[in-house]
Length: 551
Image 1 (cartoon, one colour):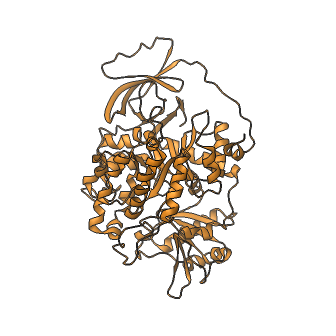
Image 2 (cartoon, helix red, strand yellow; image 1 turned 180 degrees about the horizontal axis):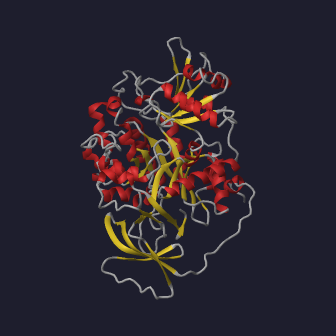
Image 3 (tube, rainbow, N blue to C red; image 1 turned 90 degrees about the vertical axis):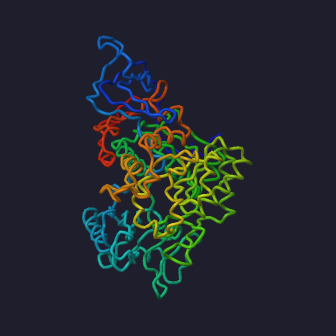
């Protein structure tokens, strides 16, 4: 019987390949590090054959003679060798598209953002829609949401759509709103908000579910186009030292694009994909069950559900009012009943459930559903996750370990959000926010990611933020709530062994030990001997996946 995954595949020729016997490879003259059982292990050489690690050599071990015919020796040139880094939460297609769209991360005002879009447009004159990403009004002098009016001055006729840095708000011009049929009489959808002026007219900013009013009118990419974007993104991620990424919420057409890439051996790194619960074919995918292709580069065995919005756009669902906006508690994207039904459907189908929850209300709701549904579905072994787990009630922190729920968190969110987080939640609630140390002390497993393209996908930015709680200007001097920081060993584990554990791949990747996959990177600096404040500057010189150099 043809299942959903076969239906999704575009026509392609698949040639089965079997690895030929090869001689062992030995990389020596290195500073090697891996985390095993939460303990840092150092070594001076790594030996692998094909895609599998055979041995690591510590200082006490003698290296094979270079005359041995069955071993090819590689000089590591004194560099540092680490396990391949894993980003446990990113958006690959969005990242690839961001490389092809206006970049607004560095905009310092609404006017500057418009000028950056104008400059981009002059270089990309063939586009029907002008799109961009990365604006953040919190960093602008006004600290106010932008308006369509400023875009209309430069783009009176061409539709423009610009996504906020967190992906939970968008900024449109009048041409885009006209195409979408949005006007003063338009109603905000459940779980979303159309920002309006004092006369009730849409200003051009759309929050969470309201974004679809605009995005549903933007022409969709074909599967062939998606393949090109995904391959571009994965290649770029490999250059940063990532050997695996967890793609947080993809549609069935993107699954098909991944499958086509994988069957053509065009995936340089691994992808652990989460099915978007909003996909029109969601029920059909659940009925087909978890999917894994023989090459081990692609797995589709988890589901992404979004319970609320983001803190920066005040869409994160809080139990009490926002400290800087009385009468506002954020947005729940599902009713409590529908959220529970969606989680239950995925658990009963054998999928790991990974639910986006940022506000303390959303986190509490998700944990409540997990507590009851993990028991009834007997799915504790699936290691369900909360994506972000950003603002928590202190009483909820212990529930992660109790329920075997993984906290999938992004260290750079803390250093990016430090400019507004206390304003949003106040001095009391901030004690349960970005609370890595409290979670670790309570026995929780933290799987690290970046949430790219919201943040940079560079994993060394995340390692730096995990340890220092500082930005790249070393601010604040003592670290932002430094008591919640990780040790470097804990941070490395969160990007390697713990991230692999979060994807049920801890028997294959995430550590450099015999029998595991030969996924590793070579970097120019020894992160364990350099000042912590410089970790983010680390440069990757080589990336290896399955014993093959991909960068």
